[in-house]
Length: 314
Length: 314
Image (cartoon, rainbow over all chains, first blue to last red; front, side):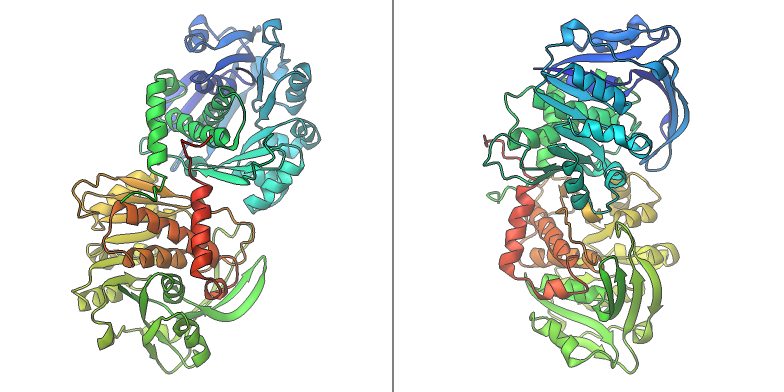
């Protein structure tokens, strides 16, 4: 089934302990699309400037991503400049040039209207809601957000949360959104805001999914939570886009399955972790461009192996 | 098989978001002993003052812990005062009264000399080494340490690490000990210092075990790492002793098994997480005093359930 993702298509100028790169292809929608493309059909809604060339677009189309919804505007593309130090847990923003993204008004091509799954990447919740309303027939809505919207655009954000089936955020965002330090308490408060299910990403430690009695159609699905590990990775080159790649792998897998069961959700968390683990191994989208489904499935098996206890084993 | 643990037996005065407690029984050796006592025989070497009453000793002996090695000295017992705020990730030390612990000179009762497993809780590495040398016949040595010894007593610490089969530390300690941010790189460096295996605790996110080609007797055990989750807990009352309780559950389980296989090591990590998760639910050692092996095994099953992906499931 097809996923429509709306979000940023951008250029990143990055400095990490492994080196520097100027204006490499990035953006939440880009990382998400590439990661999800290994599982299902993906359609992108975004806006770029004249610096976004046919070569950049080919990065996506080569992976089968539909770029008909990428608007080409006069001016430059969104450009983020950032650096990471030490354990690279947090990015330091050195520059945010919104450029054409500052006036982004998502336009949904007619050919996208039959999309089954919607992913609202981290953009203004007013735009997230507008896109969601324009696609009343989607089967499922998942979304992301960030501190800025939580702090300064809370009322608008709450309107979107009420429409989401799955919210995907990190520990800090969950705490900021609820004012709760404890993640279990925070999760309950988030789900009371609307999302039927919540995925909290813990960076290098994996992710936890919290379920409510609305998470699954099956009334016998009494699952309340699930925790998936991340692979400890020695060669972290650039963490930019890891969270979006996680979301792409996670939601892409879900969209590839006939029904959202607890088992599908759990498996999706593992695939999310797998795609996030690939993303950080090279700068920008390089690693996602150069992986294969075989490699992905091999790492999926590795994730299981390093975290599973076979009680029947010797 | 029997474990001898050497470390602090102390009183803690605690303030957490859940309340305050004055002079409750604590100390690394106490938490470790109680947690390990659910799996195997435990013998404690420590020192206490006149404020350590028969009632305090009974907390341990009731769980079958051998307290013959607890020396009763003139003066007061080690007394730590600390507080936790917010997500309780880090303790704030408000007072450290070493009292009789300041002149601690571990004395090993004759009846302890046949101990099979040795656990060197977080004390001066000079004392850790002295105890280790006094027990040349033990089957396995595991140990803990902390920032203070890593920073200011490094040469002595390195002598102990060279004697250890398993080192159990947290992320921060692993980074401080090696100067490496990346945990995989740090783990390799730690194992080059001596320990055959390394367990890095990630607090609420679980723990990762790193293995070397010396970790197991079996030359076919090519396992390189394993990651065990922690249960997300809503009612964290007091995190004091969680790490020592983890170590007690982990090492207690290992000592209860005939041989250290990869499977035993993995299972032990789960039991470590289980005991740590109980420890934080009440102040001091209260929760460990009031649990049962049935409750422990039920939580062990829960840990598996919330983290395991059964590929054969529907």
